[in-house]
Length: 110
Image 1 (cartoon, rainbow, N blue to C red):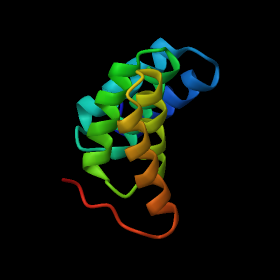
Image 2: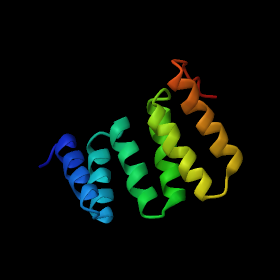
Image 3: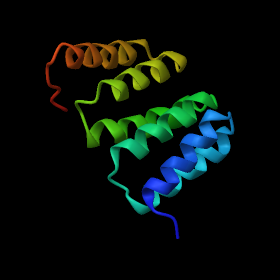
């Protein structure tokens, strides 16, 4: 049985060669082992985004942001997915959170 880190590595390898479905499946398997792992949720966000599953990317990105609200890349990824869904106000809010974090600030979730 693979560990969470082995699934993440497999997902990263699949993502690197463009096998997005395999990457998504590997990241989902990592989440199955460690449902509170921020890295796995953010990786799933990006795999879904790259497949054009923007609603799914937002869902995963929101889970990742709840697990680590002060990760700049998570908010940036969410902003990109919101733009693709034409949810501009939410995209701008997520981008602003990423900017605050880049300046050394902290985010407090509502």
